[in-house]
Length: 146
Image 1 (spheres, one colour):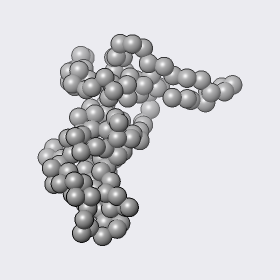
Image 2 (cartoon, one colour):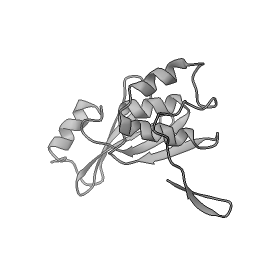
Image 3 (tube, one colour):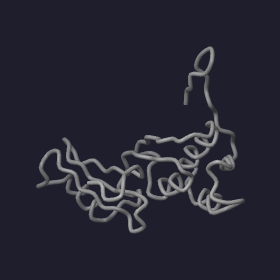
Image 4 (cartoon, helix red, strand yellow):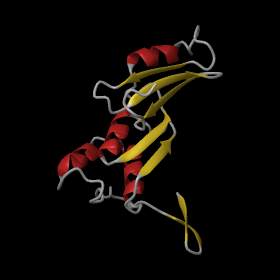
């Protein structure tokens, strides 16, 4: 990850152990955020570690399908970080959307979008028909927004 600061770009490198959530993003003393961090895969913990190195601010991160999952997106939302990105069939996305992906959206017109919120309403799950069917997750939306 490169960030332009002062005289030029430099690398932000995570440490070998997971970083503690910053106070601005924590949900409590050791809090639920610490417990949820333990449930993430090492690959997903790279995302939370890199975000914890950033100055306190409002962020919306965009991830590809290597990192994106319902569990990670809920964790980021609980840390007040917005997230959007493509995902894989095994990311925890709704079974209806997985079934659409398995047929590559046969019968779905190009450009059509299907959306199903998670039961807790924290993450919106999408399919979008392009040349192939794309699975997508986002925590950045307004209630009732179509």
